[in-house]
Image (cartoon, rainbow, N blue to C red):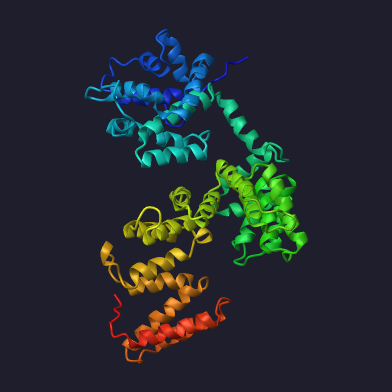
Length: 514
């Protein structure tokens, strides 16, 4: 029988492993020539009876760490949860290896540890590795990011040590790794490895013509191809028009193979009323498909069920905030970005703005448009962390640059209204009416507020120009009509518009087009 080939866990930046932690600390030490792996091992495990060859086997990942050392760290973790100071001496001794100046290891504080620039460099490198390791959960990765962002280096290193000693599997064999990943994702489904291979082959070999190959695979009921075609129909990519019935047809084929996201997508079609009419039966079907997708470990399903349970929006499903929170937390553990937003909204509604900020921040830094706009709102209004218009502008900009299908239109509105229309001297943003108009016109079909703002701008320009420019008059009529056609246009909005136009008429302050 051929010998299994294992992956070395101390020579690359793909695994947050015991060996890579040792390697990076050694590379950052000032006494590289004198530094031995056994020295660091002795510091971490408070032992001195360990052979260099044994430590080397642990570091390369050839051998799993001995249970007696892991049990020692399990006890330390339990103590750490009660008292954060239990590992100060250990981290101080590690710091002693890497710092140029002498360290008073017996009297050092967590605050002093957190101030080490060398340790921060190590943490930066380890965080970069954590993002490459698919075994590192989203939850842990986000905790490490937050610790790094807030310079909680002590907590960061401790969490990394707990992970690489207690949670990271080793050794990892090459073939086993690939099979584990595939089996983990298609467990409890009717999807075969051949289905995956056929779909990937089309994507890799067909280039821009891959849609033709995907359609051919869909005719054979390949679940991945059917899901892909369904999603194209859902977004109107195939014909330029959204076709929900066609999307449903292909999602159904994929769902019958137990494709997790396809089951969720059918539930979503029913829940939103894109198919059916949101009757009690349709909402029940939505819940049924969400639940099936949940059993297949679809993160979207946990998030959607959390919303259903939070709002009681499906007949016979009782509202329960605590269960909803657990659903959102499970969705997060599976990598769902939108669950952060939903948890943030729960805490914002409860006026716990710090918790809301923490969840929105994670989502925004992962590039989610709605959350990035929320962060802009928090910084513009001074919620939780105080007013910071530069950060507000930056987060609005991040949100506004997200893809169309995920874009939160309010970010473009906020940039136009609060920064470009009149400029913002506080952060050196010059007035740019053309930029404001461009942003607002992009979203005028979605937001009545954008149409109202455009109506005000063009009305002001028309008055300033002495009521002579027909182009401005055409734009005024266009956006007045858009406002009136909007479902949110009512007597209150109408009165607000009229009052604002009267106010603009009386203003003599010039409006420049730059």
